[in-house]
Amino acid sequence: MGVFGVIGGVLGGIAALFVLIVIASALFKSASRSETTTPVAIPTYEPSERATGDPFPTRTRQPTPAESDSPTQQPTQEETEEPETTPTQPPKVTLNTSLKSNTMYRAGSLPRLSCSGGSANIFNHSQLKALILKTGKCMDQAWGPILEKQGIQFSAPNYAIAAKRGRGACGDYPSAGSMVPYYCPRNNTIYASTSAMSRGNGNARGYGQIIQWHGGIISMMAHEYGHHIQNITGLMDSWWRATLDSSGQSGKLALSRRLELQATCFGAMWMRSVAATYPVSTSLRGRLFSFYAQVGDYPGWPRDHGTPANNNRWFRQGWERDKTYQCNTWMAPSSTVS
Image (cartoon, rainbow, N blue to C red; front, top):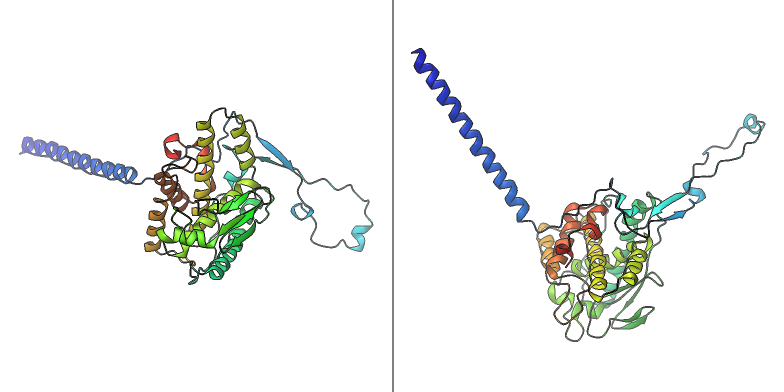
């Protein structure tokens, strides 16, 4: 019996080990499937890392009096008799304005805000314009505090919303054969035509023909707002200098795609921040993801915004990963920004 007991114990141990191997293998395969079936970009940048080789690294800003430490109480009579001392100057805030290591990547997530979209009709100019201006203020409330906390001076953009068309500081809006709004860094203004966005312009179909829910157009306005964020954080200046230094057209277009896809990621971050109150249900979130799989570079147009697949990828990146450094397209693999 002793021999049989030993043999039984050995066989039992082998069987237990086999079961553990099978379970571990199943878990590994499950984890692998979940990664490969999620078309989301994975930037290599982390906030603690510092990229090298970027030629436009910093700018310095003197904090305003409100940002410096100051006493909250008036001095007592006894305190006023003490010898006066020379107040120390508040430290200067040195900002990194480069593309890869910008200070704004340390800002983290946007706060969850209450911002209802209501039942605005995207085919009604006054209703859509009112919604654009209202949600624009919500974007101010979301982006302003997290940028100021990093020492970045925040200012809100301006808006010019026409029923059909107009001419802005950076050209006509919409441009011929296009329905897209645009951000002009010359005067920090977002220009848009409500009819072009909802019904299209020429051969370009409108966003309202792809997704009739107003969240699609507002997410596009959040993209344009993302360009404003790029402007006030120095990202846009660094992009423009890199573009001027690029000798070939393909290189310039590649830089443009990284800029545009980053703005899409920022826009998705904001849509996520108001999802509970806008609201963006699970079904509407799915419609947004599908919407971004249908916008981007089209055949016959310059390859400056990214493929529809990568627009979908970076919108999901901003939605699902929800931190500013996760929108660092400048350190992402070239295949994710094609």
